[in-house]
Image 1 (cartoon, rainbow, N blue to C red):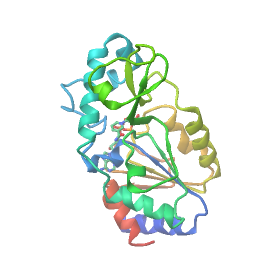
Image 2 (cartoon, rainbow, N blue to C red; image 1 turned 135 degrees about the vertical axis):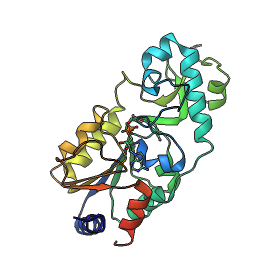
Image 3 (tube, helix red, strand yellow; image 1 turned 60 degrees about the vertical axis):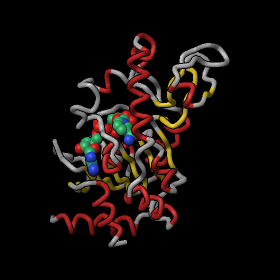
Image 4 (cartoon, protein in one colour; image 1 turned 30 degrees about the vertical axis):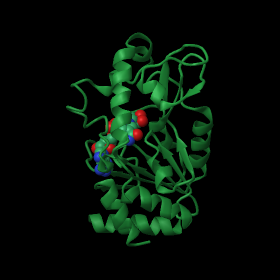
Length: 239
Ligand code: NAD
């Protein structure tokens, strides 16, 4: 099937679906200028972010942890949602999609106008105390200040490797997956557990959109190779 046929097929499925859920990963934000993890060579001092975004680093190498997240938060402040994020918000308003389940922590779906979003890996836009959970402002984190309530270390509200997902978001994601009759997966390597299990939990049709297919994705009903923004714009022409 040609790329155009695949895009047209997905648009038809979306028009017919009564409940569509979108699952996204870092590849949805690379066209906003935020690097993903897998294509991260040179992203940050040749250090694999996956070795820094951990509870271990937070507890035992806070300087490194702090530097990594300060860099990410400062960079994020220079980026904004792209046309693809805006289309997802528009489709939600038109009733074409019901929910976004995202591994992204950048908050770009809400910034673009989406309201039905589960942030499965938390948000980098807010900060709390690691010890007591009290919320703090970003400036205190940037200044490496401690928690005003207990003196603990401050951290962004992201889910670190080694931590559980926020329970309410995870329960919501499971429910939406089970009820969906179409699941569209965009820009994720599906390497991170447990979110990578979600596409297997639907009885609906499944679609995988990615700029590069490094392995076969036979379990999906439809696979579309292309950049998220371009593919979403092309789908929109058929809706
Ligand atoms: P990943 O880096 O493992 O995979 C990204 C995938 O997106 C890759 O398969 C890549 O081929 C694809 N991709 C890159 N650019 C694309 C584009 N323009 N269009 C379509 N596909 C594109 O990221 P992941 O699967 O999300 O999982 C890793 C973790 O990274 C997650 O836990 C997530 O929280 C975190 N992360 C988040 C952000 C963010 O919030 N924007 C950024 C980096 C990493």
